[in-house]
Amino acid sequence: MAFKSDIEIAQEAKLEHIKDVAAKLGLTEDDLEYYGKYKAKIDYNLLERYKDKKDAKLILTTAINPTPAGEGKTTTTVGLGDALRKLGKNAMIALREPSLGPVFGVKGGAAGGGYAQVVPMEDINLHFTGDFHAIGAANNLLAAMIDNHIYQGNELNIDPRRVTWRRCVDMNDRQLRFVVDGLGGKANGVPREDGYDITVASEIMAIFCLANDLEDLKNRLARIIVGYTYDGKPVTAGQLKAHGAMAALLKDAFKPNLVQTLEGTPAFVHGGPFANIAHGCNSIIATKMAMKLADYVVTEAGFGADLGAEKFLDIKCRIAGLKPDAVVIVATIRALKYNGGVKKEDLNQENLEALKKGLPNLLKHVENITEKFGIPAVVAINQFPTDTERELALVQEECKRLGVNAVLSEVWAKGGEGGLELAKEVVRIIDEGKNNFKPIYDLDMGLKDKIITIAREIYGADGVEFAPAALKEISTLEELGFRNVPVCVAKTQYSLSDNPKLLGRPSGFKINVRNVRISAGAGFAVVLTGDIMTMPGLPKRPAAENIDVDATGRITGLF
Image 1 (cartoon, rainbow, N blue to C red):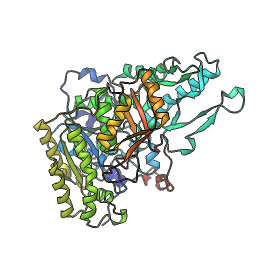
Image 2 (image 1 turned 135 degrees about the vertical axis):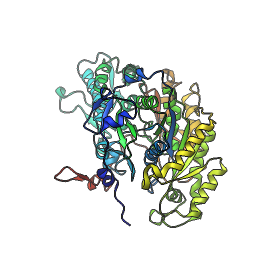
Image 3 (image 1 turned 180 degrees about the horizontal axis):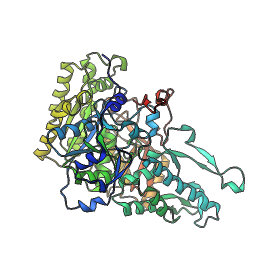
Image 4 (image 1 turned 180 degrees about the vertical axis):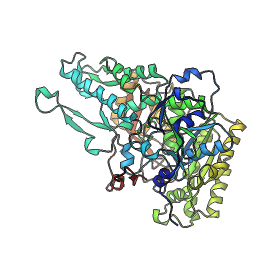
């Protein structure tokens, strides 16, 4: 049986005018800044109008560690939002914007799938409203001002060898990881080693998504440490007088983007930090606004619960003052069998033994959410036609043993209708009110102890091995006054460990920390583990090879 592709489904859909979508939230045309008929920005100043309104129930969607078999986290998030509205709930969703890197690299589009998508899908995946370009421009303005300052006399005494600020571009381009610039003679700048990060891993992206308002955004930009003087003192963007112009570039991008699902559910899609090398959550401003406009808000955090969910709960919730009411953990039978050692081409066959071997990955994530963080959870089994009754029953039995229900989800095939049972279970556990949420570590712990706590409690590691460079940097950062900040661990998404080949629930391993750096504007320390890169590369056969546009402007191959 042939299935329509995601882009075919999206292109065939009849979309509502964005003003009609906004009306479901009580917004008028005066509240919208139109980007065509199906996209609009919402002024963040509206938060002041709704400041006394009760906050919505907040539902976080996360997943097991990703596999080539696919899990469907965004698809589940979208379908759950649609299902809640079918139950008569005033619900909306809040998602990240996709990065062009994965769109043209391995993953392809990131707007959900099947009949659970946010639309217009092509726009969302390709440029959208230009937010990422604004973020890249702000990042690179600062880079230009740093090098210009050094060239123009270097009043702040910046050591060119200790400039830590990197340029960025929203594309997978390994060629740019390490470069030497300023060549070609005196008129072309001061030669130095430099490099690029992908935009979604930049500190500007993190700041953009963690700022509570425009003033907070500007203050965070001012606190960015761009490098060090010859005598080892940090130099900030504020000292370079760059933060005001950077904020001006971000002013319009900072307004959340309103779109819709295939079923007309309102959706904010705003900000997009990676979860393996950044904090992996949509903007605080969009989440907070959604929580004032709706009664139930479904959001997601990138990759598995060991990455996105941990950072959502330990970083975003702290900064924004949020308390999630429930967590949905997405898994597929196929992905669990892959974790149990089955090759991708054999995943359609029933294999209870492999499923038993792979299940501990899911159970560890469940344990982390319910026992470590103290939040009620439900497992959403994103169902495939090849799943057998015995396989489904096994997952449900094992989850029940941990006190969590596993509910079948068919949102890919049926949209909101296929998520009704999931929505009912989410509402039930919220209404039950058993929520003892607390972050996994205290902020007054030292940086080293925070890293060890995450490694042991969340990843299940025996401990952490710190490279000498990492220990030295931790000591320096704590001397500079950054002992009490959260930590953002950059780690492979494919394993609970820092080794992508260790699937399931590995044991007897240690996390290898090779370096630690401060994102002073974002307000956290970035912990680099294993061989994780802040600028990904393209695969041998990039997804870009399959993407095309015809003479009428119709795009094909985008998922």
